[in-house]
Structures are given as structure tokens and as C-alpha cells.
Image (cartoon, rainbow, N blue to C red; front, side, top):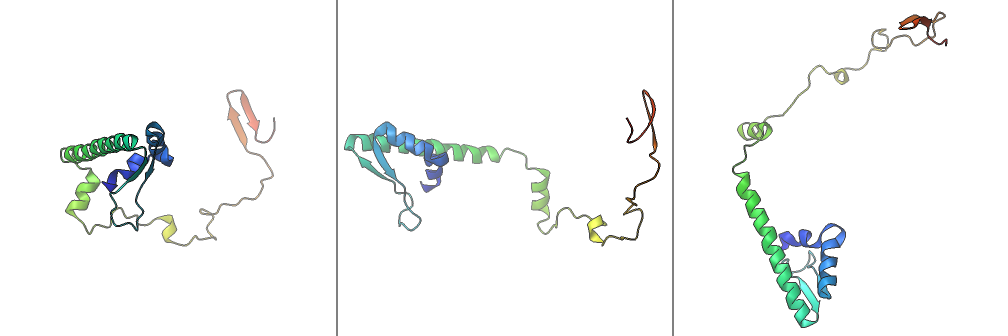
Length: 138
């Protein structure tokens, strides 16, 4: 089954390389343009090819069983609130933010939005646990 090919190949081809080394065979997967997407070509010694074929069919059976088990368990799981909302109201736009700051252009003349960044002549006093101090002085 072509759905299990990615799992047989593994990350960066690690799984299929291990299988090819273990059975001393060459494994070729079908291209997208091939007629039969499920056909895998195994070449090498006949006994090794048959053993490799058995291994691949066992892996396919295990992977497909995992898929079936996952689907079966999925029917017993409670859907999330998002999925329930999506099912009950398919035309819902989702979460909408109204009156956000990016909805209006900034008022550059506002001193609240853009306070003065000029330097003050006197540093403010800061009270600390060790007494008061002026900012900027140590």
C-alpha cells in the first residue's frame, strides 16, 4: 500500500537503507508517473529478495493496523471545543478582534501615544533599600 511507503523509507531514508543492508538487496519505490503506486521493486539474490518482501509485507501490515487502531480510537475521543464549534457552525469566522490598535492609524501628535523622548536636565530620584539615589549616578 503506497500510504505506508513514507514510513518504510523513514527519515532521510534511514529505515529503507537499514533493510537494504540487512537483506543485501536494492529497493526501488514507484515514481508518481508510474501506473501502479503500490509496486515496490526489490532486486538482488532471490532468497534475499523473498525475505525482504516478507519483511516489507509485515511492516505494511503493522503500519496499516496502526492506522486502523488510530481511527478506531478516534471515534471514542471527545472532540475539542474548536472542532465542535466548527461542526455546529461551519460558516463561523472564528475569533475576531475589534477595536485593536492596528485598526486605526497612529496619532503622532498625541503625547499619550508618543511621549516626549527628550533628555531631562535633572535625573529623577530613586528610592532603594540602601537609600535614595539619582539615576545615572553610582
